[in-house]
Image (tube, rainbow over all chains, first blue to last red; front, side, top):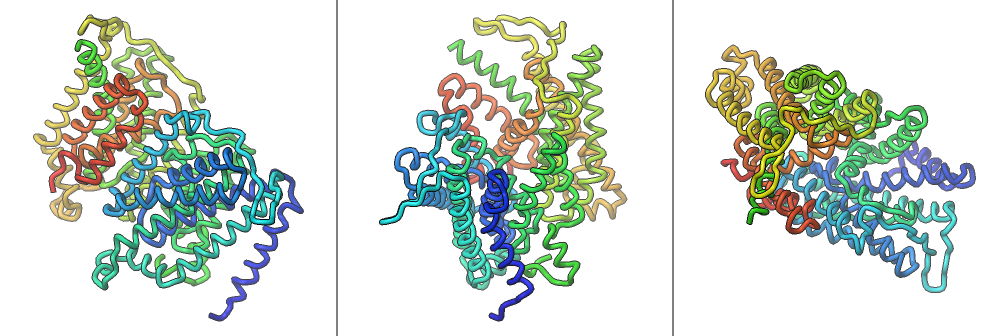
Length: 319
Length: 286
């Protein structure tokens, strides 16, 4: 495939800038960019489900929380970051496999309601299972454990060191997701989104592929959650609540559901706008609500989709 | 034994609030075909209106409740006319997201006007006090709520099954184009239906103020309850909403008493079970 320099050059510059963030900004800037990266992971996973496969889940925060809590519990026992993060991802993926198997039998609003109820089950469980999860106090003093591999031990207790770990994980995960959506698998997902009936007619086992998308989305949510635990060092049941499931949805909507980079741009804008608005007024939700309403009424392609249309290009075969 | 019966009455009272809340949600879904996340926020708005009129301005409680329902119906009219009407043709995710955007907007507007504190007005003097039932004092106000719930049930049944207006609304829901061809003003019918749904939510919210503190989190807390109830009964099914409300109210009351650890968890289990086994709901036919 020929390299499109109009995309490659800004991309390389962007990645270079990300590596330079800790050199330019203090801890707060680093923290903010990390939040953007975590929401990016959460949102691209979610959007594989909505933008590419056509399923709107309202329970993704459940998988995020599973990733966060399992990672935190592992880190409190065994100080190895890789072990914690891997554990969080696997736990979230397994949870998504079970709940997804039950969920993908339904579509449309029934799917959304079922995932909402599963997410809220996880929330209630985290809230009430005090001996393990700490109940509404959450888990505190989660260590930012060192990165240990055979023969190597990298200390990550400094925020800027941990930043590079999160950056690498994000770059790899985004690259993988890009590979997925551009592969025949990604096209299969889109075929199911555009017409489940036709997809089934050409022999695609749609439930199995919907489940696959669901599990991948769960893995990404789990990864985001697992990376969050050592960052915040305190996690509470609120991360599992359905209102937290709305965050990747809003990020994807803002950036554009039908463009690969949509949820990424959306995540950056979501965190960025929030930061600015919170400094100026208390009314962050009002601003966000108005933004959502305006996008739904007039700019359903999101920021990127709208820009692409203005420049005369189409977005993933769906506008 | 008496304890169980008493707890049943407590559960039934809660069921009636859920019924008032879910009735409007399921009517709006059944006729406009939009699942409205901001329905809980309308409930909350009804509570704030009633608190202001009754608790702050000292207007007669009944008048305050009535005015709150009317006021929220007007808010509903504006919402339907300027927002919902533009999204009937859109795909599901966009419809849901618009109503979620309204949740954010209404929550913050409430905070701007009334602040973030918990507000509790006094119980209206006429309904203060309790009567002994099953060996314990049962608040008269709860008995009154039970009566209102039953009354609203009968009223809705008459409106939608027996009146010309209700038939027109159902006809418009069944086939919008056909309704319009037959000379119905379908957009106006939809506006009235939504105002009606909003007024029901507000009625629930307004009647709840003596029992439950009014705060900005109320809308988000209630909408999930409303989803559970309407899903159990069948989305868009009015009688189903009544049954769902009884199920959830009872489940909450008895699990609080018997195994409080699972009180939060159980309603979601029932909701998920219904969706998996009978997605059209307990009373939905297919």
